[in-house]
Length: 275
Ligand SMILES: Nc1ncnc2c1ncn2[C@@H]1O[C@H](COP(=O)(O)OP(=O)(O)OP(=O)(O)O)[C@@H](O)[C@H]1O
Ligand SMILES: [Mg+2]
Image (cartoon, rainbow, N blue to C red):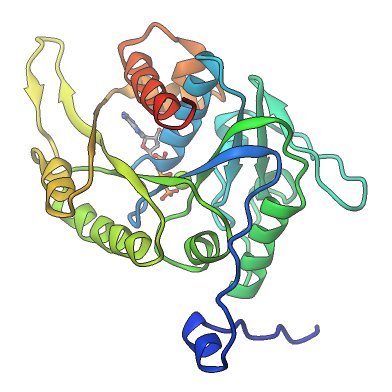
C-alpha cells in the first residue's frame, strides 16, 4: 500500500512561510452545521437525525452527513439499506424522508468494523464533503463521532463550517469531555451556536420530574464558556424506539411533545441562518 503523506500542521506551515489551508465550503449547500460533543452516547445522532427532519418539516432543504466513520448510525435510524450510485466521480446521496443522506454505512457492511487509520478517515471525510453531489440544500447537518479526533479536526480546519451545536447529558463525566469539545471548536474558530441538554430529566406517569443524571449541568457549562443554552430534551423511551425502527420521532409522530421540542430548535436554526 502506498505510504500516506503526513499532513502539515498549521504551525509547521507557518514556519515554512505558507498559509494555512483554505476552508472549503461543501458544494450544494448554503450552510453546514455540526452536531457534536466530545462524549459518546449522549444522543448526537438522535439529535442530528431529528433536527434534520424538523428543519425539513418547516420548509428547509436538508442533507444529513453521517461523519461517524467507525460507528455510523444514520443507515439504521433512517432504515436505509441501499448503496449510493456513483458516476465514477461523485456519489449521489440517498434520499429518504426528503432528506439527502450520506454515510459510510451505505458503502460498507454495517457489521464489519472499520479498521482504518487516521489518514484514511480524513480522506473519507474529504470524499463526503467534496465528492458527493449534494443538491440545492439550505443546510447540511453533520453527525459527528465522539471525541476530538481526526474527523473533528478535518472539519474544523479544512471545511467551511457555519456552526456547531454541542449536545450533552447533564452528568459531570459527560461535561468534562464536552468542555474539551468546546475548547477545540473555539480554538479552531468554529462558531458554537449553543449547547443542548439531552436526556436532561425524566417525567414520570405521575407528572413528577426526576433529574436522573443531575440538574442544570449543561446550562452551567454554557454559562461558564459564555455560550447560549439552547434547551432541554427529556428522556423518553419513544425517542429511542422510533429511531431503532428506522423512522425518528419527528417523522413518525410529529405532534409528540418531544417532536415539538425538536421543531423549536429547528425554528431557531432557520431564523438564525435563513433571514
Ligand atoms: N431524549 C432521549 N430519550 C431517550 N433516549 C434517547 C434520547 N436521546 C438519545 N437517546 C438514545 O440514547 C442512545 C444514544 O443515542 P445516540 O446514538 O444518538 O448517541 P451518540 O451521541 O450519537 O452516540 P455515539 O457517540 O456512539 O455516536 C440511543 O439508544 C438513543 O435512542
Ligand atoms: Mg452517534
